[in-house]
Length: 380
Image (cartoon, rainbow, N blue to C red):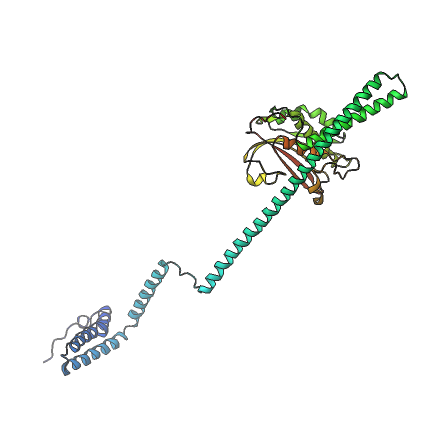
């Protein structure tokens, strides 16, 4: 009599059931058996029966492996699932830092430290050189100022006596050649007195009448006089701020400085046509900008009223920049060399700043910086 047969699908199951049954036979069942036997061995209860059980578990595992080999599609699917899971996990992790040896890290750190130290040493060297130049210039100007002050006072006294006597002689002299000579001598004496006064201005110890000064208004008032003091081929352009802060200053001294600045700018065209620009503005100057001044000492961060004269002339050669404030130094045939020294003296009297920028062949700009927050100075 034949035994009843179960349907094939129920006896063998679906491919997924067969696959996972094989997995259990190959891994789970042998693992549980081996754990059980291992515990018996540790307890000292091992016997031949346990050895037989291990052999049976091994046989089951081999049978599961053989069955698993018959399902390659399931194996591929599991492999893809595992690979996808590993890829997702790798993507979610932060990138691993590049492996560098300790020696490389130490070398990089030392290089960065050496670079910073080198930059600091170079900056310190430049600052030291700048301070030495400023100190040498200050010493030279102080010694020249003391000399100029003594000479100016002596010359003023002598020239005043000469000029007075020439005036008396002129009043007692009839018309003729002698009178003309006296008048010429008076004119020369007046120029000499003016030069002595400029020496006093260079020292910064001349007469000082402090009033509230508006640079834009002062430049407008001097426009006609300035144009007459330069060749007709050179024109003056004005770029004046509409509203300027006032400060305590001597308008006569500032007008004298402005005239010298404009004359110097016009002479830079060497007889040709050109344009001179007069600019006024109010600006806040910090420490770095004030470092450009001829004398930085005593200048604080502040709002400054600025008077600047610009030209596009021949410029100043670099080798002459350190001598431009020496009295009577000039590269012009008919120059007296008192323009910039007088300007420097005017700024010293105002406790202000002076910046000169120049490039040969491209022009020069001279800026006067007047501090707006300083109190009224004592009269000189």
